[in-house]
Length: 436
Ligand SMILES: C[S@@+](CC[C@H](N)C(=O)[O-])C[C@H]1O[C@@H](n2cnc3c(N)ncnc32)[C@H](O)[C@@H]1O
Image (tube, rainbow, N blue to C red; front, side, top):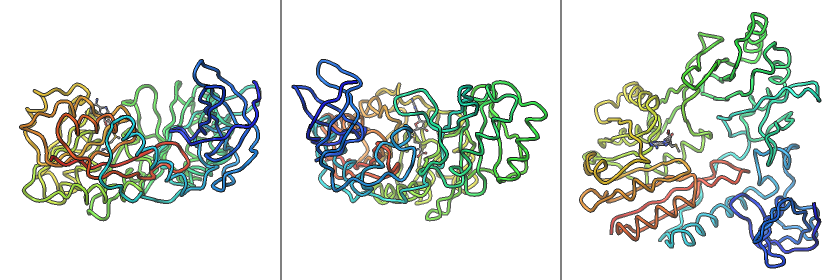
């Protein structure tokens, strides 16, 4: 590694790295903040840019704070703990506005106030890696190290739900004592309102002694173990079998959402409630309207829309999620005005969209790849008057926004960020489009 001296950091990029210029190249510097003067070491050199790590902070930003987690810098879970939490939100807001302008050539008429929530202990879904490291003579349980496939040696985590964070070293100790410790590569975490589930990916079945250790751990720490022997369809409860079902509630809408450990749910349930509230205010569903919820998952937005009296169709690629959504609609007494459809929305075209009929409004909540096929498939006869777009990737939101505005004649009325994943570089946002 080569150490370079004195560079002024101009801004932060989408991944929370400081951006500077030196010798005609862009330098992306991990651990550096905008406005700081730093020296850095380059770990990858390309003709037009370099990837580097900060070695010394020569002039510090007033926004720099002491990271709370002792694993910060090694663990790949967070990249922004060294930046004041409210400044993180401003950075994300700038990333959103910059993406809309530079990628999509669009600008929101109004910037919505950011949505905040708790900044520590918020993460209720996680995939932890497990590795028995012979050199260390013990098992590690945690996130991957930064830029590495190694499992970080984690004793704690400040963003995981506190109960699960406290269990990290105890889970490692438990697995150390199992005969299958080298055949157990992953633990999936799902925190519900009445039960906390750990799904162990087991490549060999646990022995009778292993099973006794798992039972004792579950009793002592009040968690439920599930086992997964192969693909997601093989996830089954192990112990205790009489634990309450996983669920989260949306009290504002009088809704309870049961879910299974392998099913997609938002990782931050507190902010999810605030996000749904905002989405409902922006969408303003009304009785008599026909509304589509694209990428509906288990019905996280569909059921609140239905609660307002609108007719709503939830469309989703995962068949298990569609079945779950149908069951949840029935459980919440919302079957009469909901219908769900399994469909690959990345293969959407004009004809298949037209077949669904015209909707007054759309809610769209795609994965990181965005919804380009869906927005391209809009034709004048079926264009909804309002679209509320929830995004976990500002770049694809911006790309899709350009199509909505330039091709289909929408106005981008408003956009704003939602701090769903504090201390990480993930930018969650919401945007509202209205037909001119
Ligand atoms: C960001 S999640 C949103 C889920 C839901 N709206 C929620 O809030 O829980 C994106 C959803 O898109 C679904 N999805 C991914 N690829 C898809 C595809 N090609 N067609 C349809 N749905 C897809 C995923 O299964 C997931 O449920």
